[in-house]
Image (cartoon, rainbow, N blue to C red; front, side):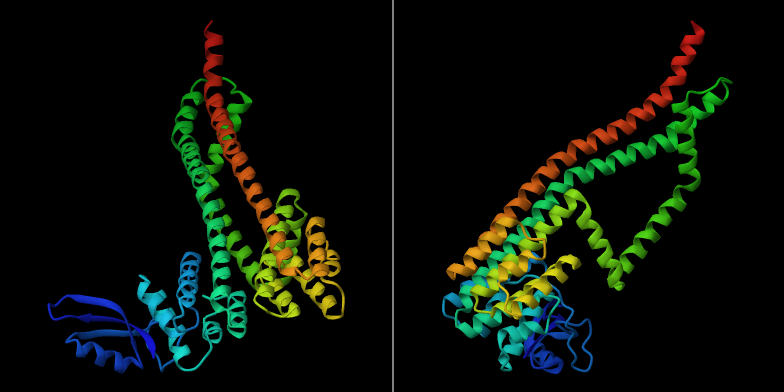
Length: 404
């Protein structure tokens, strides 16, 4: 069975929308007619239109939805319910039709005999390779509920970190927009009127005032072209980052050379690697496979290439800590903890500790950066407004001197 979105008219003539499980679109219409509803449109839960039975795999899921779904799966599986019943219960709790349809489609594959991880792999935009591999390891070990509980912790932490950054950026973003609006208003309406007044005076204007007049004229004459040029440059840059791996690698390498940004990039990516490696190792995934999957989740290409090379050295017999040390991207403390974990047989626990330490460093760095960003924006915008005000007032001060 699969999930289908429907639009139908009920007995009272009210349009109803929802999701229903059925073998195919025809079966879905039959189920609606059995309720004395008139079906208007039936669409697959994973495609905009039903076409030749093909199901799109591009259905995605937000971090919040994934975290909530994972926690519900872990809780219900721990209660001893079968996987297909758990998926049906989670789908019933889901409010968004598209997400509900996605879960029902996963359930349909499970009912067809596929493993849960295999069913989830059919939707890579919703379930990452980390997620599917961890679920597969949990199924093999017989501790799927425990593994999903750890996955829920991981996805919730990722969501909370993203929310923390977004919430912290709201106030600075509003300040920037308001400041840009004020400066734009002054340059567009106030400065031209002052120019018309000063042009009749016949005296030499101060350098600051003349500079402001030139800036205002330039904005008025070339502002639209500059805006269009910025949009084109951003579009071409994003296109090159997406299509050209060499260009993307060069940009990522450049970011690593910037003092603060480079350190933050290293910390974020090594923390992601350590956390993923810890989850996969504790789930019973072999070390080499766990390293390969974890390295694939690193977003910075030079770091990813270096860690994948480290995985190759481990495959040839090298110790994990020595292979990671040669990359040059892991902190000495992290290397010592990993070495201790290898020696004591507690690698998962040490990797967990490495991830916790690095995520704490990331959190402190974010808090410090944002606490400095707000006053920096205030000072910058205040300096710009002060420049405009002084440039407008200086000729008036000169007139007062001439008059005296």
